[in-house]
Length: 368
Ligand SMILES: Cc1ncc(COP(=O)(O)O)c(C=O)c1O
Image 1: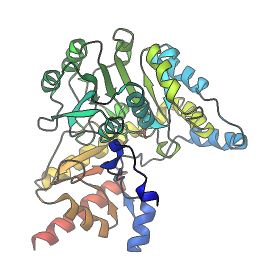
Image 2 (image 1 turned 45 degrees about the horizontal axis):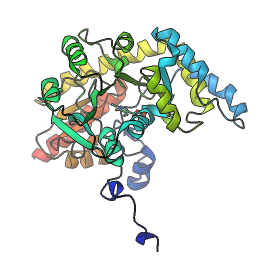
Image 3 (image 1 turned 60 degrees about the vertical axis):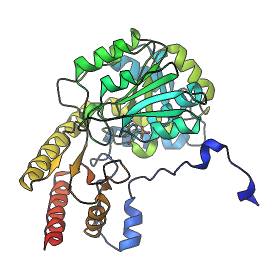
Image 4 (image 1 turned 90 degrees about the vertical axis):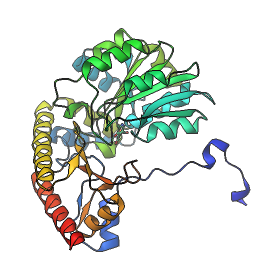
């Protein structure tokens, strides 16, 4: 009997990642025609037309394995970001880089410091390796860098900073982060996850890429899943010391990123207009939502990402269900560590308006 074969003890109590509810699933369950998904911080403007064209051409090569190290994309990123290409590793989403880091560096019992709450994949991957997540509570939704420094012990192996933080959207101020990078001992890997980097409009945001040369323990993660609109293709990257790249390459799948993803990412980097437009529209959408929420008397965390975590003073699960019935998928804060919140991804103007109307309807009907 298969259930008699024990798994590794690290896996026994591990939960399964619960993603945002897919549109197709809601359509099946509720029989609604029009569904708006504002749950997984995806780009509502699809991706660059240049990326689409590049994929159409590349489709003819689908029978051939891709180049495992994505050299053309690496070169392009190196050029655009002004960083040595030996410092870049392209992954199957930045999720994969997180996995490669914990796979390569976490030994049973090693401690890994992260915020409580933050992107849940840090904790899961640490647990898979038998490491110990050390969770430092956020202060009003912001990273507590002092608290994180105090949490360092001789067993600390890694620190994760999610900047902007998912799910609160807050950023760490430039000066505070710079000082933190300097204070973290060099034998601890410091991973700064910048999945939402391109959306940030606040000037008080540290440009970390140039620091990778000076701090051999610093690792920066970015992705094509968010502003570039390529989430389905699974492509992201990390920037780090070349010696760390060499270690991660040992444990990565030989063909971790596919041909379509590689060419789409390259073409996306050539379409700066698309990125700028998405950034501007996101900023407008964020302001619109903030304004409407304020008018409704609802508070939210100050977000620099393409999502807002809204405090609703009632169960996030309930509101999630009520909005679902109105054809709008958001994330309940219950599984995200803030039970009385919902997290809503910023959509198109039309989607944002539809969300606010549905929210008003739901809030009013719950009051009456
Ligand atoms: C903070 C953060 N890091 C990493 C990821 C993973 O992104 P990718 O699609 O590149 O694996 C996400 C996805 O939502 C995220 O929010």
